Image 1 (tube, rainbow, N blue to C red):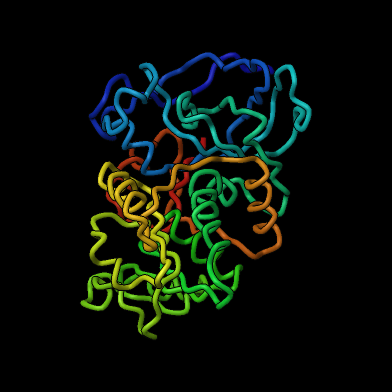
Image 2 (image 1 turned 60 degrees about the vertical axis):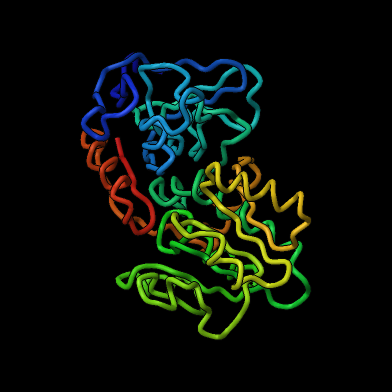
Length: 325
């Protein structure tokens, strides 16, 4: 590797938002056992990133300051550590970085072989890089479809035009589900084009009440929005319906525990992402085959990472926010 230094974005303490991001020149990381060093061609921002900066996972994350945020990267392998067998220098890949380590908003990142996947030439870096956190979250949420009875599953996806939501709509349709989705009025046509059978404007009475226009009860809800109480979901669920909360807070965990104790058949289930390389390989293959696509909200150079950060904090991104070094 010829380069010794790289550009990176860091923050030095909790809080501060976009203005606390600092542009620095740092040493290029070296691989340790099972590590892959990637020259980053694209990274993506997830709400998780700025929530960590805000201190919402204090004291677990960040592990130490200064911290380079970002967990989703796509690029080219430039070095591998001892024990790496699947990848070599020159391979095009996408990967999820260990959130305890961070490192996505930089020209070079270190990832583990186990959560790295080959990127076929048919899939661009900016398309692929949405998959690690958002794509895997949507895919893992829909594994609950395995327990749905033999009828066509009825799925509700809230915030269906967002990062996780737009993948969830497409993946649910690939599993032959009937999909109802909620989003803002400006994105109704987009979500319908992604495959949703019914689309609700969440600002209307029916949208706020989550009422299916065809009077269906939901077997699975992939809950990507915030601020919707269990009392609004419960009457819309089938007898064994589940709400998969992709951003579980204390209230979700408490409800989940109480429902387990009461043997309730309707459940609010917290999703804690368990990323696997084989699942990432599967999703990028769907993308190669034209069965799954990334909607890109906006692209920003690394030198303007603050704008990408602010865009995510606003909470109205359509699809994924991409940063390109």
